[in-house]
Amino acid sequence: MNTSLRKTVLVGIAGLSLAGTAAGCAPGAQNTPAQAAPGATSAPGTANGNYKDGIYSADGNYISPNGTETVGVQLTLAGGTVSDVTITPHPSNPNTKKFQGEFAGGIKSQIMGKSLDEIKVSKVAGSSLTSGGFNAAVKKIKADAA
Image 1 (cartoon, one colour):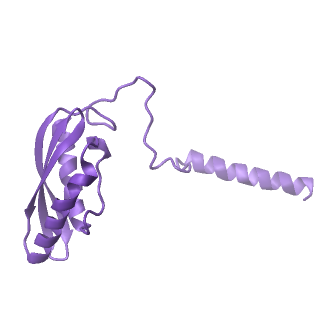
Image 2 (image 1 turned 90 degrees about the vertical axis):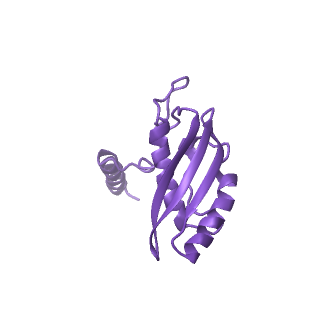
Image 3 (image 1 turned 45 degrees about the horizontal axis):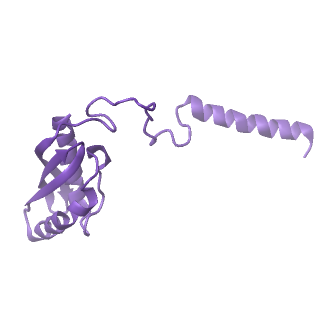
């Protein structure tokens, strides 16, 4: 490779890198949470935030092939972590009843002992749509517990 071609390639690559950074599109920047300095504490309700201990309840809605469905979520927080969970199914049809029941039977093992900020589920015991309602309820609980 001749010297002038090598300089052109390097300048072109550097230009692409700067363009991505200037636009706020640096690789990994979109989904990387901010890291706190050692010894720093977060404000309530923020990533790794402090939440008040207690029992919190909320309903979460989600869309299924049968329309809008609702699932009830009750979380007990102790020392910033989930110490208990209760799911209250609100099925509108037999399919929803089946999936919300399966979700209720499998959620505990996925969230017990985790901080409220760590909880976001996508599929539990074969139920993927109920997770959307659960996550919506957890968002409400975060706001209440902050």
